Image 1 (cartoon, rainbow, N blue to C red):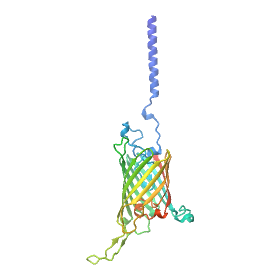
Image 2 (image 1 turned 60 degrees about the horizontal axis):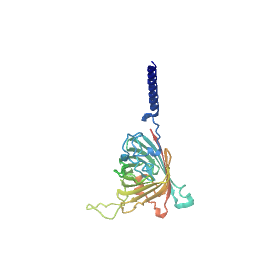
Image 3 (image 1 turned 90 degrees about the horizontal axis):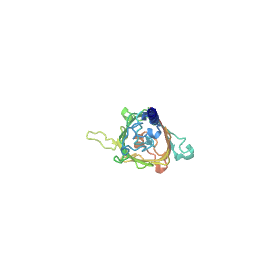
Length: 327
C-alpha cells in the first residue's frame, strides 16, 4: 500500500510539473501576429521594404534599406518608393536669389515659389501623386515605380526606379495659343547604390519635352515662297543628375545634387544646377534646407528654363518638408 501511495504521489507531481512548464512556455512565446510593430519615417520611406511583417527570407537576399531618407533629394526624386498604403504631404519652398544682399535680406523677402504635393502608394513599388506649384499655377500629375532593388548579398548591385511627370500650366497670362502649349513632360530613370551605412549615391538621366518653343525668321524661304521659321530651342532636352547622401548622425545627413544639361540649343541654353544642404529626419517627417540655383521646382521647367548661374552668385535658399502617414 505504501508503494502504491508513493507511486500515485510521484505521478501526480510529474503531471503538475509538466502542466506548469507548458503554461510557462505558452506565455513566453506569443504568436508573431501579436508582437508590437513600430513604423519609423525611414521604414515608411524605404522602397525596399515590402511589408511591415515580411516572410522569413535568407538575409543575403533581402533588399538593402534606407538608401535615402526621403523621396526627395533637394530638387530631384530619389530612388525610394514608400511602402504600400503610405500617404505623403510635400511642402517645398524656394526663396529669391541672394544677389541683392541686404535689400531683400538675401532673397528671403524677394519673390518666392511654393509647391504643395500629395502622394500615395496604392500597391507595392508604385507611387502616384498630384501637386500645385505657384509659378504659372502648374498642376503636376506623376508616378514613380521601383523596377529593381539592390540586395544585401550584392547579386543586384543597384536599385532602379522610373519617374514620369506631366505638368499643365494654368495661369491665364502667357504665350499659350493652344492648350498643348501649356503642357510640359518629364521622364527620368533613377539608378542608385547604397555604398555603406553612411554613403549613398544615385545617377538619373532625364528627358524633358516642351511643346511650345520660340522661333525666328532666318530670311530663307521654301520653294513655294513661304518663310522658313527656325527654332531657338529644341523641343526635347536631355540632362543628367548626380546626387549623394552622407549620413552624419542617425537623424541627420549631408546631401548634394548636381543637374547637368546635355542638349545644346541654338540659344537660351539652361544653366546647370548645384545644390548642397542638410536632411533632418524624425519618425514621420523629413526636413531639408539647402543652397542651390533651381527655383521653378517643377522638374521640366528646372531642367529646360533655368538661367540662374551659380558661378555668378545667383544662389537661393530652399527647403523641403515631407509628412508621412501609413494606413
